[in-house]
Image (cartoon, rainbow, N blue to C red; front, top):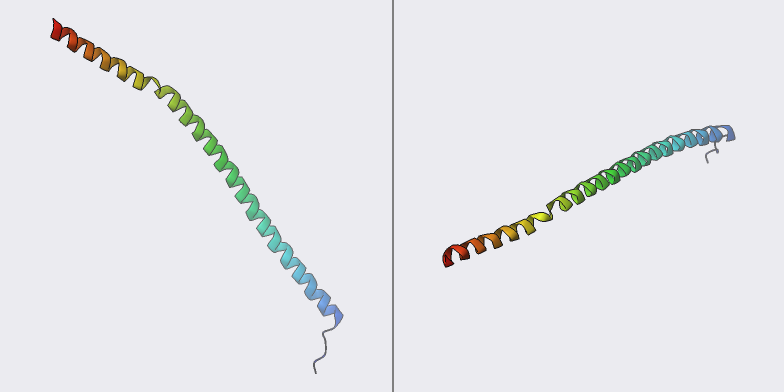
Length: 84
């Protein structure tokens, strides 16, 4: 039979294990904080792109109307020349 380790060595090993676990949790916590920061940056970029896209869409609305008016003017001029 083997002898159980003395309580002092168990306490030392448990303290080492506690330190290792604390370092691991600190590393995971840092990684999670970095992921949250990147997620926030991505959200800000998406909001910025959404605003820019809205601005482009607002500036684009008259183009189909202008095209329709130009088309109607072309038809009207063609009809006027045909009748004349």
